[in-house]
Length: 127
Image (cartoon, rainbow, N blue to C red; front, top):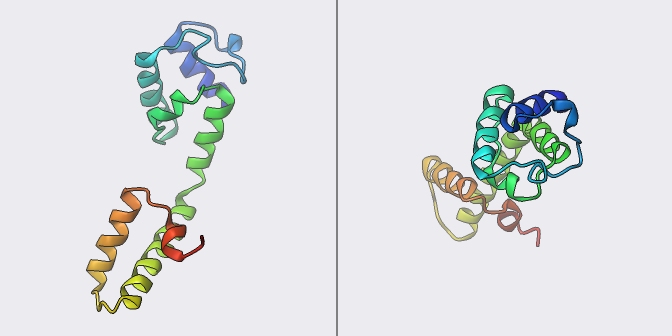
């Protein structure tokens, strides 16, 4: 995977992929913010994952980006587990507070929680 990512980066930076070290910042190689957006688009096309633009503000290296891409490729099952846990947590909260919320309302609240990226541990009471 690192080789494919280096090919994309090499095309964007107009340098040979073999000159790109796994642990060297892409900014040290000359990447700017517009090139970063181009890289995000290339990663989405090549690997089918959405790389957050903020990932490029964290001192991006090939190694770090590969780790992030691999994690995203492995998350479909984890996302379903998180979805189920979020639905359960919202239902428990509704029950605790005396609400007889219907399934659609619970699903809507759970979706809002997921979309806002609220940590599910707060809902589960894991603090």
